[in-house]
Length: 253
Image: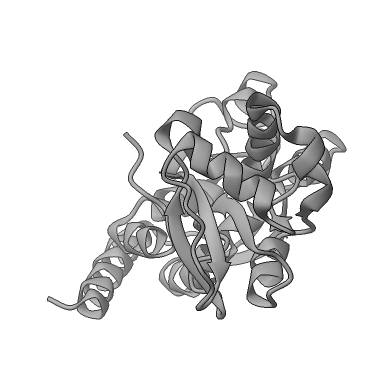
């Protein structure tokens, strides 16, 4: 059975499940979403809106930016992050029973289409690739970008490599790669998968790897808690899982 047929069947099944749910008032759901999940959510949004009757009002940003918005009291219903939301639950920002694991992703290398792929098969090879590159992209304040900085310190090459790093807002790293402005990006797969002009070259060595969770949760001050929970339920439905996997997320253990 082809992938498109599987997706269509999953979407129909999900729509049927929502159709059986008690009819509720249509609501605008405020969503704060990590930029790494933009491609997946943009594909899932119309499916959810058709099935539920609700509407998503989405703001995208890097995780630290979204957390700053929450700390500043900006209203939201659902948060989707490219890291674990446990700390926000502990701080009372998200409902304790709402933590929803969407998948996980590893950090790897993305190169301009057709460009040579650097050897990152071992720790030493990865280190040499970083040192020999003229310019490197990362997600900056994104979850993978922050891990890359810890790796540079751990490998003892921070002074040499940090000046070569280019980063910016959500999606910037993929665009740097696509335009050939960097040799490669060290980043998670979700922000670069499907971007024209970018090829995924594989994961960094296991010894340096950090498998990062994609998680979501409901705001404790959500204005639309029932609709927000419906969205969280949808994000773990068969239709959503197919899309999330196609956008670079692996099943979480």
